[in-house]
Image (cartoon, rainbow, N blue to C red; front, side, top):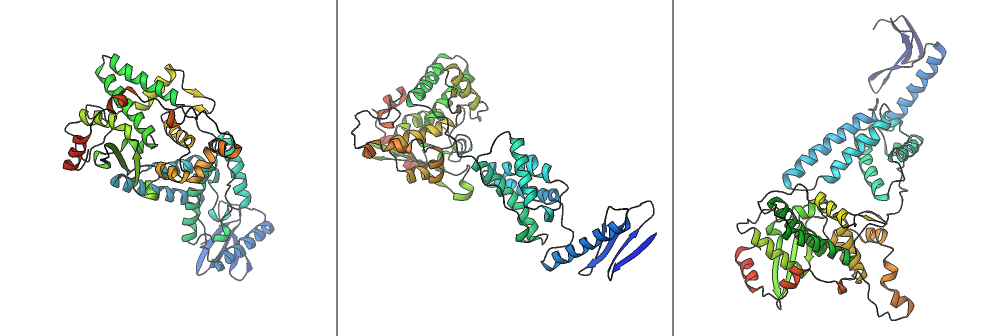
Length: 428
């Protein structure tokens, strides 16, 4: 290497200049590896100080087991994104949910990479992390919820974990992540009367319409929303991937007992398949679904249009119906298909359901129910707490619900043949 000037600072460390540059560079050796470092200074004395600081810093990092020349944050983050994309590809092959990993990629691209671009992973200290938290809140537009922060911290932890395993940092270099999210807000739900109004509107509209495609969409939507409020399952991936083989059926003293195996969704990646109990009155809907698909196969999806195609606008159709009935807005935000799940949990809490059992049924945690539905818990036991016997039952309690027309008709039927066919086929 040709130097214009070369000045030795100590044995093994010197600074030098090259042609076409007024800046001083430093060169030294750490663990048999030569490192060339730009001081960024044209002043000789200032360059000496910077070179010496960098030399001792690199030596200290080496003694701590940190590899010389840590990568930039965005390089490691992009490696994590590559890992996540591989996980997503494998999950698609096995039918697992990809939502969480897709969210992680979005978080890295939208928040962490833009802020930390250009910073080496070993230089991200607590001050930098605190500055990031302030910037992120401004970008987000409000304080983030605890659950959102958990996702952010989980994927950020993957980046630091990768740097740790490759020897670029030690565990002592990892700063603390922000965990002070806002308390989970109350979720928008429906009263039972509101749900019945929606269901009846769909039922009547289904018989009014002369458009074949609209009729198929409405009859599917009718059974879809009944299924959500009969199970508490998550609209979207959980419900839409239910297959005929996932539904079990038997009669107990003439009363239908239905369960469904949830194989794909938000939590199955961590908890595996969970068994969900279906309210027995869904048998009326199930009978209609069976009739619509006489040639069904065990591994085919249940919630399809009558022509066998996936519905593309189920959520939008439901939203349009809510708007027509003036039920879209609530004091706790706009209602969507997902509000049906919140309704299920709310109604069961008002019927004093066991919270641990309810959490297991819904594939969630007791802590989540406590955070989200804490406004209901004291009123569940107002009689016990006050010593006053209340005659009036909770208006949204399932004990006071008015069944649909389809259920009223189904309740008088004998489902012995239904059970027999299930035992013969191995699926409903």
